[in-house]
Image (cartoon, rainbow, N blue to C red; front, side, top):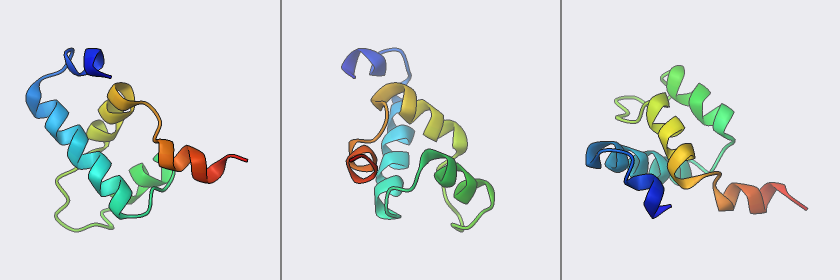
Length: 72
């Protein structure tokens, strides 16, 4: 994970942290649903973009909380 962070700017890493924090605060939906929520402006004045979500997936990988909740 730390090696992945080195490939991106500090601003991009900060945005991915913000995206992950928002992801957990709305209940860890699937990535597809999370992108849909942002694209349809369901959260007003949200600083997180779909590109931030994509970068978070590249840096951190799939979310462990989501995987534990969905797998048997």
